Image (cartoon, rainbow, N blue to C red; front, top):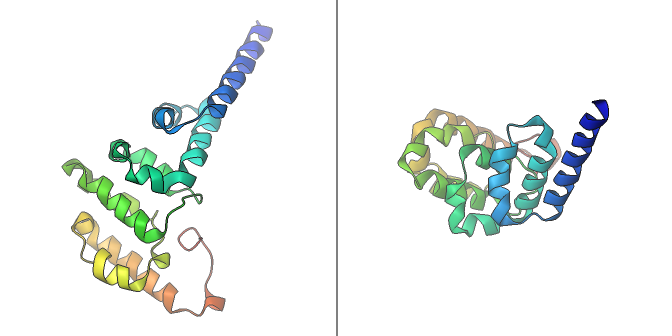
Length: 167
């Protein structure tokens, strides 16, 4: 019996390796949703994130982008591999939020994932502060923007690196 269990684990590992080696945008979305909740598929899930994030700018322009679920969006935005500037990331999140009216409640969940301090101050002033997509989280947004402004005012030598400030 024990040898059958180890054979099953070996087969699962082999299947994961084949899946990872053949990743493309077509299957990544499905895999992200299916593998997220299964601890034994964590490697496949993380491989999907690592595959998609460096091409986030391409994905954000694709029509299927708005079909990602909120968890996939969180997973992608939490990656340090995204190939897009923060203003572009903000606009992609807005596009995703505005695709469906029931997503407005999710706006607050993105605030901690966006790196506000790397957005140009003029972009924050003219675009972010008045954007209706984040109207449901105006207090939280104000706090994030205040921190971003404070960060931008600091001399570069005094800036601490953390999840919100990491480039």
